[in-house]
Image (cartoon, rainbow, N blue to C red):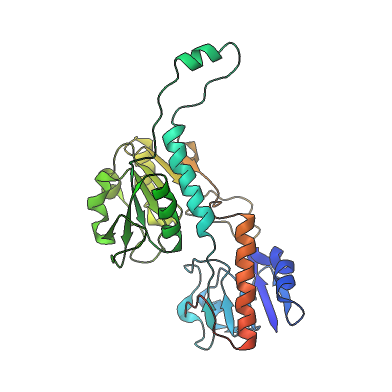
Length: 313
């Protein structure tokens, strides 16, 4: 059985080959062919245009991540199954907790600790905040949202799940529909975005919503950058209308081989109240091990005729 791994995931071909064994032939290609049918048994990729999807001839498209917004699902042939994989909820939830604790504990720079400064640093040490009792709203309550809620509640935060379904959710102190998000914002200390990007959620936070937030509120975006309108976010941070933002997802991503590209049209990295990270919240050694083990099991299920897991369509 032939497995083709495309794009940025090519370095992990040896890992997948080792997990699958000799019954499979795993090959990597840096880019998909520009013309003609793409024939393989399994294609592993995070990006697929409508044209590429229409030329796909395979049994399984296995996305090596959870997000499907860069894959033209509607153009994929009906006889091709599509699956994704999670396993990133653990490190992303830890990343969010770090952001919350950093905001509470390290709001001011740590003073020098040499002999000349230590007496004054000790005697004049400022009070810092606590996470206990803060109110967090988590927009999107899938695997990431639930894992994040469990950890934030363990720190003593009150957690509101903001979901499309707005049904009672185990692991949340309260549940509200997305349509009520704007009315919740004035009471929220920590706003975590981890929902999918689609036509309903694109630009869901704009000038009006940001203006409704507390002036010391913390915004953490580990979902997709376009959930928040770029210019209003920059303006709100620059003017101090919200306290801080931790941004791990971006408006622009480099294509293969691209040497120069700004992550956003505006210089968020210059703002003292913006913590900018290069999409690292879920990027751990443990993530790779779990994801590729899951994908190998799913591909083996395909070979042996067992039901596939995490079927998208």
